[in-house]
Amino acid sequence: MSRMAAVIGSTEPWQSGEVLPTAVCVLAPNPSAMTLDGTNTWLLGSPGHGTLVVDPGPADAKHLTAVQQALAERGQHAVAVLLTHGHADHAAGAARFGRVLGVPVRALDPAHRLGDEGLTAGDVITAGPVEVRVVATPGHSADSLSFHLVAERAVLTGDTLLGRGTTVVAWPDGSLRDYLGSLRVLRRLADEHDLRHALPGHGPACRAPAELLDQYLQHRRERLDQVRTAIEAGAGSVADVVAMVYEPLPEGVYPAAYASAAAQWEYVTGRPAH
Ligand SMILES: [Zn+2]
Image 1 (cartoon, rainbow, N blue to C red):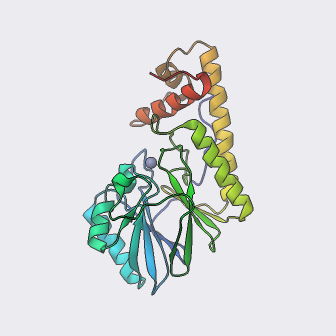
Image 2 (cartoon, rainbow, N blue to C red; image 1 turned 180 degrees about the vertical axis):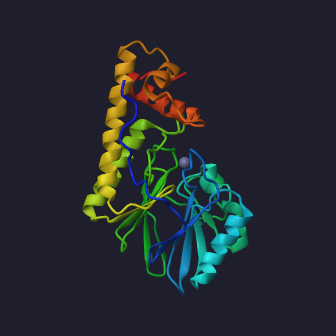
Image 3 (tube, protein in one colour; image 1 turned 90 degrees about the horizontal axis):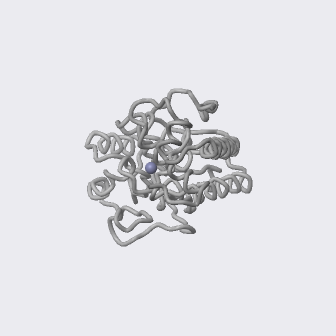
């Protein structure tokens, strides 16, 4: 059974820096098999204006300092922390960032907020010249949001779309049906607004979001075909599917493969993946 699709996304090295005049990445120091180069903390704003700090990443004092330095060097100041979702590699540092920077933390999930303001699909948030429209993109997690930067023709995707490799559907919170729907929502957005940039939660920014989304959708179709074939060939459990479709696996990614396989098992069989 074929296991690995062609590499999706960019294999270029990735580091902190300005991607757009109004979008700067500060890479968090948490690289791993699951987080690629580390979590991308995005600063959305321009000199002299308030700036949105998206996904502070892990609770890491050095990273907080690096974000403060990047803001100061550019003459920017934070006005809010926004979260694409509540996974710890994006959100664990959020409350501390919010307190130290003196700004609210806005997230879909009330458990991750600091202050009274939430964050929900359809919200429009402005910071100087930057206008962010919030788009619901559940699937990777139930609380996943993406941020459409209108003037920049960009979309900040959290973990819904990564700069390299593919995303885990974090079953049971995540749902493959929702995830496929969200990829289609972003694909339509890319067409309707002629998007030129994807700013992912991990890995390199992408200058061809529509093509990347097509690759993601294609990869999902291929994986589902593989899972269906494995089940027809006798796979009787999620662990069987992992063994037949995913292995051999690099160290540390079995839980992620299991979660994705479980999401696909439920999607294909309609049965709970216990
Ligand atoms: Zn995540």
